[in-house]
Length: 296
Image (cartoon, rainbow, N blue to C red; front, top):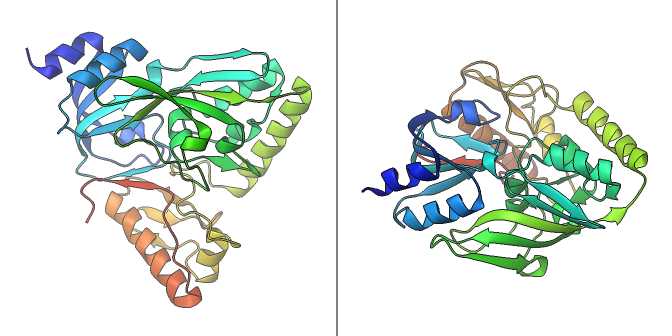
């Protein structure tokens, strides 16, 4: 029996699934294989069966991802089946497939403060931990206690926050490891006060970002002491369009897909912004979006 046949017993398994329908930018060719495990034990068993030579892509909502039009020649693992959230007093535990917005809503209902920013972030918790997501002066590393990770051999271990070398939009995970759950230490607060802060964050975000069009979130990390959006706008690129991709006229650190844009359209805009800002200000913009596979 092949490894593909073996893991098909452990969850949904398909071939040649378009990744455009699994990313918020709505761009990307097919995944060679697509696997959605039924739970943690199924994922652990499946990972031990996939050959080490076969690339793996953990995927939540695909909110920080630019995938090549040629797709991904490996196994995409959909974490949608691992979405559990629970709490005990001020400790929160959530699985990697939990939507960050849902985590924020759960925390508000339980009177737990510290993750309000997640109400404005479209991705899943695993991806948020991998990039130390944050907004409005909060970030995951502020309250994270530990993560449970799954290794390529199917083994599971727990790592404390101080072992992850977390800084701005960056987390160091063991090579090939996948986040499967995390624990947070939060503060007790009034539920309605937490909801008020979340509502204000959502209001600010909806008024300043192009949320009505497919996008991948912030394209670049903010350089120290400045903002990528300000630099791109000052370089004269706000609103510029290549193919069906555009540097948003609402927020210059967003690239929007105005209809069947290609990955090359987006990548051309990324390179243009980097070159223009470097030439004008001597600042190199580092991508926050993950660029995956086969893009020249």
